[in-house]
Length: 225
Length: 227
Image (tube, rainbow over all chains, first blue to last red):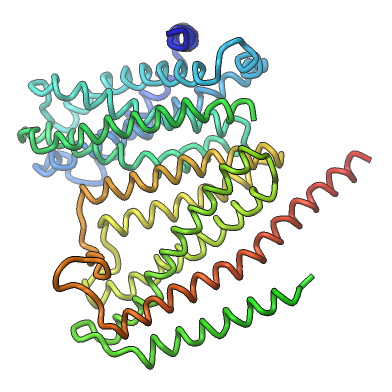
């Protein structure tokens, strides 16, 4: 319980910084729009098969924009040596990790919900009726991506070329979460029954659990050395 | 600094590799439907097993480094990962030569192929990360932690891909009814796996030593700078 309270304090700090500066979310949202524009050149954006690939497109937008958010997560703490102060603070590394992961998830979910209507308009996809299913998919998929991203954000913070290193390390490991999210989202967008894909939802939940535990266990080693 | 045991290892490896070539190209019977191209199998699957063992060695060595902080384990971890990349590259490079005549395509995004490619990318990511960190202790800690994530990730990627789609031949060796290899093929396959394993161990001795020297040079350079 104490851990969660500490994690919440860290998360609130990050959310407050973002609410005042609006730096990351603005940039990431604009970037998401750029990616949506670029996709329109790769296939016929009015074609019927768009729906078949819509889940994949959407999650690629989320991943690309998400990496921008994740890189900033620990990198912003290097200003004025905030990271050292954070590590020296009387909270365990796992609280810092959970707090940051929580804040990042909120940023990403905000970004995703903001991008979704634009995506709907641009690519003529209907999902409103499926919102009740789409929400858990977004939350679980995003948490899986952010947990790994937050760990690697900490891991690469003092490394050369960290902006390049993060996606290189994050994407191969998050492939399963991405696959599950894409599969579920596509099923929802094409209007097929979700029942056959519930195994993917379970898979996603298991993925999130495993990497959350791994992150909580190992983040102290990353931060302290 | 070549010792006598280096020569013995090199000799045994050479003899085994040449024997493996002989078994593969001359001795083993021709496969009925696929013909001569099937013979690449004896040089395609064994490197994958070695790469899988390499990542396990790297993982165990990484964890032991985190516990003991003994740099010999870090040397072992990176040496094994380097070789893992080499063997996984061999596995990936030989596959298309078989796939093109048999499947009609060089590559397909099937469960095993995708997982193998992701594994390859993980080895690459690991080695690139190491180059981007200068401080030896930090480098060893970060890469050890990364290995843990990658090893768990590799297993999950494979499971996910099993759910997704598959085209690769099912494992014939321990498969069900009607599967199984001709005894001669089986022998050749086992021998080739052993040969690649010995090659890995032989190279591991050298890469480890190389890594140790690299670290010593780094230390000396630091000492010189501080003078």
